[in-house]
Amino acid sequence: MKSILPTLVLAMLTAAVAPAAGQPVGAVPVIYSSDLHHPPNDPDDHFDLATLFALPELDIRAVILDCGRRQLAQPGEIPLRQMMAITGRRVPWAIGLADPLKAPNDDGRDQPAEFQRGLGLILSVLRAADRPVTIITVGSLRDVAAAFNRDPQLLREKVGRIYVNAGNAAGPQDEYNVTLDPHAFRCVMESGLPIWYCPCFGEGGPSGSACEDPRGGYGTCWTLPQERVFERIRRPLLAYFLFALRPMPAPKQPEAPVHQPAWVDNIDPEWRAQTWAHYRCMWSTASFFHSAGRRIYRVAEDDYQALSAAQARSRRIGASAIVKAFHFEPVRTVFDEAGALTVHDAPVGSPTKIFRAPNRALYSTAMRSVLAHLLGKL
Ligand SMILES: [Ca+2]
Image (cartoon, rainbow, N blue to C red; front, side, top):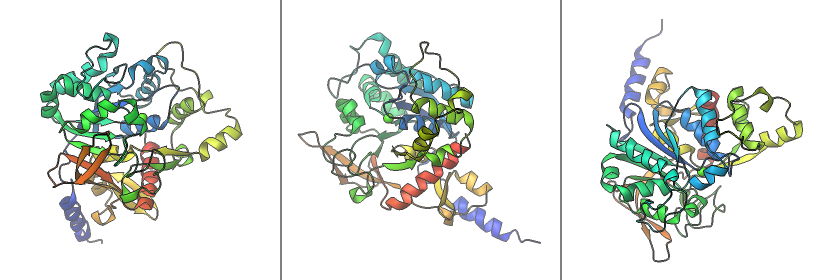
């Protein structure tokens, strides 16, 4: 007969390490802002949307379809409706402001009414919230910045965290998400709100140059061989990705076409081989796991899963299996006169934290593994 002692010791150990300091208990109310489009500009937003929906700990209170004017021609509504059909989850959503803010203190009030709904949704979700709300942005900061300028006190009271997936860790801010709305980025970074800064690229260099080996380990960029995900996922989710990637024109009606078998079957073998083997640049995945309070566990040789403390306990996976694939450090960020951002050390209580993954090989390997596992369950 097996002794229950090792199990008890394991349970005590795991209980002692989780949840991590500052992690909320229970479902986290989330406002999600994405420059999601169909046809896509970059289908990484499709992977991010699937990741968001695959984490039940994240209570999606609003999806803002960012870059409102472009949403008219390339509606993110299509993949969003597909994702809601696949998962059976219904979430409130709206398109965001049409154009970039004119200054860091612009509240967007002079933009057309049809583009004010995203901003209105952010404000109404925050007003109704009975717990701190997490905001995750994977596009521009436009609507979040305008909401702050509209009602700064509301955001100070109700926003628990903002995960900002944008920018370079330091230096000129020529990263794509920043260039969508530079004033909005500056507004949010200087807001004094609790920023969990996830710079897309590492210190210094221009966009794209510092993906694999950024100096200092800053920068969230990693690469996903698409076959890692496509080989594991169910047909409706595969159809969702292939519909985005082929690419097909936006349908005439905004009501999204529900996935169809034809999108998966009868694919040109050459196109399929290229698409499966394609390495996609990814950025935001870690912010979803972190906001959900999950940690990365090594479950086998080169095999990792992002698990909640309860999931790890139920699977008898001990704290010794936790790997530090990435972490956040307190910093102070400062814009110089030319608009370049510099990052400085700060005490633990700083409202701004920065993403860091010094061991790039571990980070990249772990992200590939955890995303494939997670989406395989959706
Ligand atoms: Ca994006």
